[in-house]
Length: 259
Image 1 (cartoon, rainbow, N blue to C red):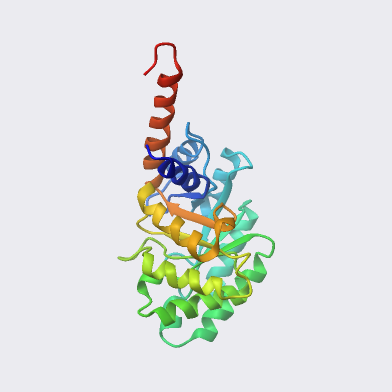
Image 2 (cartoon, helix red, strand yellow):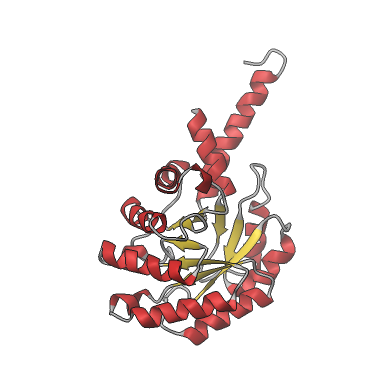
């Protein structure tokens, strides 16, 4: 395996938000997810689940693996009471991070003020915790709207801008990511705001595209879990396949009579 592929696999794992947001998730599914997060390749950055599973996940995981949950998800309605209720439930259950859906339909319909007010209220409600703003970039019809959505988050003080819920037809795309990263790079909070690619990132090769964009737009210092995340359920399988295959090959090569 090429050295760059190995580095990308290790980085993708370190920055992975291992996610389960299925409508039929239950306690058994979350137990299985927590077990996967403690597999042989190493731990991800976080698990991302529905708010009702935060306490279960937190109890099952070491403190080094963070627990994130979604708020105002997936619809992103202009409903501050719902968004704040979700956020408060996440924090009360021991969650470390909140992934908030921007009221993107309201923004696209011209109500940027209402959308910004909701984000600001949630930011205040989870002060001191990591807040990721899902802008649903695939549903915003122009780069200008993607940029405006990003500026709402940046001005409110969110910690990450995230592409997508994964529940619409278009998830993360390199074109949208470039607009998002350009907006971060041009803002006063460029050195403290991160980027999360979510929706359709299934392989290390997919992740490598976004690693390259982050390196180009934000610099090498942004390549770590404090500034880069991948929201995915299937990506871990490809990471494990690559890293464990390399580990097995190294063990064979170092064994007496190895090859």
